[in-house]
Image (cartoon, rainbow, N blue to C red; front, side, top):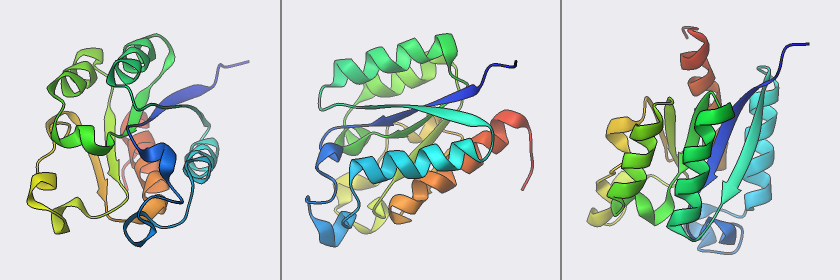
Amino acid sequence: MTPSRRLLLVNGPNLNLLGTREPDVYGTATLADVERIATEAAASRGFEIRAVQSNHEGVLLDAIHAAREDCDGIVINPGGLTHTSVVLRDALSGVALPVAEVHISDVLKREPFRHHSYVADVAVVHVIGEGVAGYATAVGRLIAVITGQTD
C-alpha cells in the first residue's frame, strides 16, 4: 500500500480564538472548523493533514523543521507573525518544502502594518481574504503545485 501524502497545516498565535475573536473580521468558524475544511480538501486529493497551532513561535518552528521528514508541503496562516517574524520565514525557506500562505481576512485592506508579509517571498501560493474557505483553496492550489497539475 502506498503511504499517504501529507501536508503540515500551521496556524499561528491567536488563531485558537477563532469563532470568538473579532467575528466581524474573522467570522464565527472555529479552529476545529478550519482543520476540518483543510482535512477534507486534502483527503479529496489523496493527502492527509497534520495540524499544529501554537501561540509560541518556537513550537511552530519545531513543527516546520519536523515537516522535512514526512510532509510534502506546508499550509500556513502565521497570524501576527506574518508581519514580524524573520525566523519563521527562515524556517519555511530552510525546509525547502512548497508553502501556501493563507489569511482569513484581506490583510491588504486592513491596518498598514499588516500589508507586509515576511512569508510572502517563500510561499508559492497566496490566498487572502476568502475567510476560512481560503484554507481549502490553499490546500488545493498547493497540492496542484506538488503534483504538477495545472488549473
